[in-house]
Amino acid sequence: MAGLVPVLIVDDQAPFRRAARAVVSMTPGFEVVGEAESGEEAVEMAAALQPALVLMDINLPGINGIEATRRIVAAQPEIVVMLLSTYQAADLPRDADSCGAAGYVNKEEFGPEVVQDLWARRTPA
Image (tube, rainbow, N blue to C red; front, side):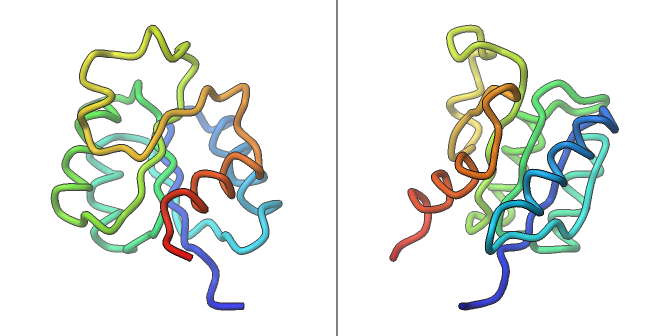
């Protein structure tokens, strides 16, 4: 097996960061390399850590997850960003579908199979 897929978790709520870290650690082939609490921190950490996958909350202090995603993908188009929030898909902010994110997952549906499925769809075999 090739190296593990490095993952950056971005959420302003420590309980969800812990839950996301647990999900990633239960997902074969993935490892958490960092956690950020704000959009600005996410942009800085993505540049420094070069994760392959970013799990991005939408509602963040400072710049929101949509703007942070836009900046990360513009600077490093190879990074896959998955938006996570409590929104229903129909209620997502208008610019969520144009920010460069690979997809959106409701936090209640987030689990190892979701991570693997998104990665399988984004990575050539």
